[in-house]
Length: 236
Image (cartoon, rainbow, N blue to C red; front, side, top):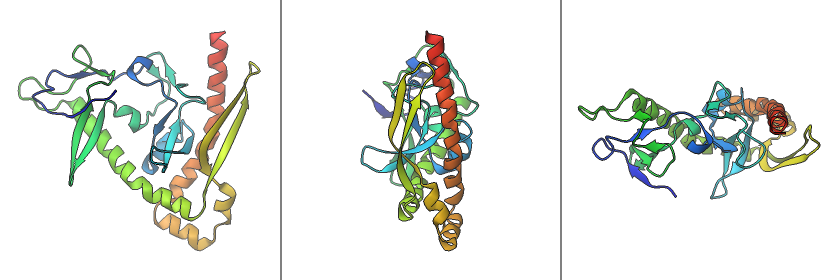
């Protein structure tokens, strides 16, 4: 269960947040939401695919594993990559919108929230936001703006028929077979067949570079397979 409330420096002055990593802190997840402006950083470590949200709309996702609940980058309390997607880094905070105003909320039921240890949110003397909370605000604003810009990118992909479903069948070193399904990627052949005017329009609208970042990220599946093999070998 979640309990989202508007963060304030009176009721939440003593609130603290565990800013590290770990399964107990909610990091044991297979995927996280991403957005086109983040693709360059994400593709260096994770495959970028497209799934559907609760309303059936396509959304871009960074993959951390090949099955639900499996984060191959989580090594105890360490995240084994130099870039952690903003959707992970923002936890347990989120943005609420009231008219034109964006408001900072916190999930009081999130495992990162505590009153003992962790990062403080407000200075005790005047209730001023700490440097940690200011960094969180920056992360949230970047994530919010990126997510708001994503539908235009998805619309462009759909308009040109550039999304295709795919299935990844993997035979691991221990002989087991795994299948990843239910996601979409960029149809590279269709992209290459687009007329010059369509490519120029995609580039002008800022969509072409993120498309190529998605295609580049497909090579990261090899890393996921290698990480899966290493983890299973270590467990045996």
